[in-house]
Length: 117
Image (spheres, helix red, strand yellow):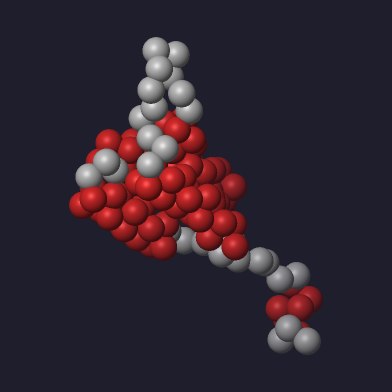
């Protein structure tokens, strides 16, 4: 049951990451939009509990950024190769790194009972 709840939480948080990523792509060309997108995305990542939810959010957000940075068949990009675009791509990588670096490691039961010695 706990696994199912974790997977459901990961799915919901992943959908939130997709929505926030699309909103970030939409407002990033303006300086205030870029600041708002990066601040809101980072605050959401920090507010999530460690583990699957952070990974799901950061991965979904980064997938949106990666898809927006690829060329369209008709030409053009949703994220251009300018300072704002490169900052969005950098932030996507940074969010993945932070999410994976802050995954809590479970200690074996014997170590937890012995006090970590």
